[in-house]
Image 1 (tube, rainbow, N blue to C red):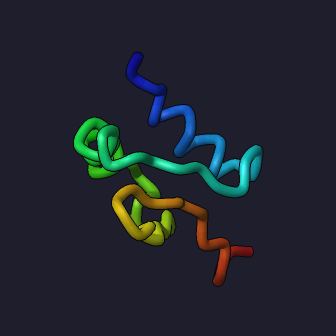
Image 2 (cartoon, rainbow, N blue to C red):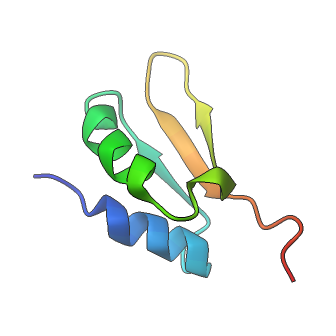
Length: 63
């Protein structure tokens, strides 16, 4: 089942969630949605050893 990455990114942006994880198996599907996101430059991913990443939203410099 493919996850709703648009919703995850929106929830991250809106502060409904603090982080979410993408596995290495999910990454290519996620990347397509991520690259179309209007606020992708504020979404920070930290790679995990063995693959995958944990993403959070950088709220710095927002008023």
